[in-house]
Amino acid sequence: MVASLAGLAYALLVPPFQSPDETAHFLRTAHVASGHLMGTRTSDQRLGGQLPKSLPQLYAPFSHLRYDYEAKASKSDFQAAWQIPLNARDTAFTDFPNVGYYAPFPYLFQATIFRLFMVFDSRPLLLLYVGRLATLLIWLLLVASALRILPQQKWTLAWLALLPSSLTLHASLTGDAVTNGLCFWLLAAMLSLIFSEKKMVEAPIWVLFGIFISSAIVTLSKPVYFPLVLLAWLIPKGKFSHPSRFFAFAGAICLVNLALLAWWYSYAGSLFIPYGDYNPAYREGVQLNEGVQPHEQLAYVLEHPIVFLKTAALSYFESGPATLAHYFGKFGWEKNYLPGWLICLLLLATAWLGATDATPVGRLKTQHRLGFAAIALAMMGALALVLYMQWMPVGSERVSALSGRYFFPVFPLFFFGLGGLFIRANKKWEFPAIKALLILSLAIGAWEIVMRYYI
Image 1 (tube, helix red, strand yellow):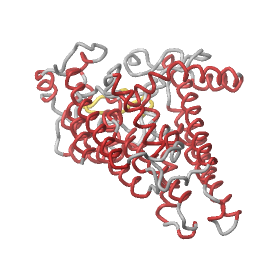
Image 2 (image 1 turned 90 degrees about the vertical axis):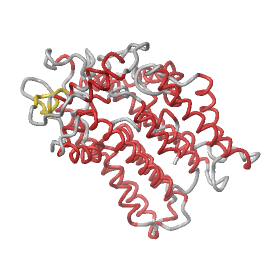
Image 3 (image 1 turned 120 degrees about the horizontal axis):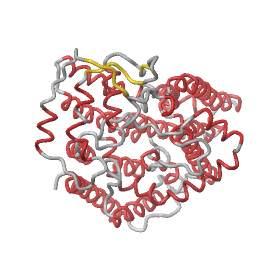
Image 4 (image 1 turned 30 degrees about the vertical axis):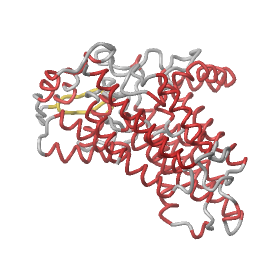
């Protein structure tokens, strides 16, 4: 109930296109709704799709909010946006190169809802808000499903899913909601196999099938989260009828996803157009950075692996405070944060909850803690590599854009690894206090949104 009400408030309060890459995700969702699974690469070096002209026009009434922290959304802005008709037959090629090469799976649910409303010629502004609500719904359903099968530390996962920064992102129109939700489900399903008392032959077939499907979708949608499949190696060998079956299961899930990763890199890489090669008339304002050449950057990393590792480590060290602030207290786009004291309190509460939330206490072994940490670090390394390739000029000394929103599937592993380190001193007041802090932080988040955009 709390998640639904807070998510609904965030979906309605944040003005259009004030969430990360929401403009591009909005256009990509509409393109998928029109029957195109991937963006179209044209002969004149553009990546996007044929869409109603009205859709990109919806951004104009709210464009003044970007980069101007004194700007406010007014009633006239919404009135102007509402007056824009869909005119579905009046189309033009529209650029969205930063998401045009993404896998279509994270957009399918929202696109289906889009399609239903587009049949009735719904206004673009209505489509945006309907898309937000659809995104919130699929996020909540995936998290709820993960919590049902998670054998322990349910409070930790629920807490991380309900952080104000998490709900503001997942109540916007973004493909990340499906990807992150599937990561949560995949994590929960893997842990159910690791800690369950049952043998593998007794595991529900739908869980095993779901692990293969969800891991494949995650690998194709966000390759940096591929290391989650390594959790299969933490399943006790004794749960299998023979050690060879353990290696067959863990090896199969890894090999299948590695094959998908290699294929997708080749396919999606052929669609991506770097800034320098993009049509000069259309490359401004479409989230492409100058000097980026992914293949050359990868070659540089392979030639200088130690240099890259140092670059990634320094980048994480320098951006650490900002990344944590973003993860625990960011809303909207740009530098919009909850009060510093609340961010610190949420960080401490999360660490405490993670360290005391294990049922039963003591089930985590050293191999589990080390395994969780290693997999999380592997995802962080993959994230640094992908951002280095897609956003940084060749040979850059730092990796920028290590935004906290990329860590929603990563940090749970660190906090899960803390499980059982401490025993709760007083269970009677701890959970009520945690609930009160969560509700307070969500309320303050709503108020901060109102202050930033309306008052």
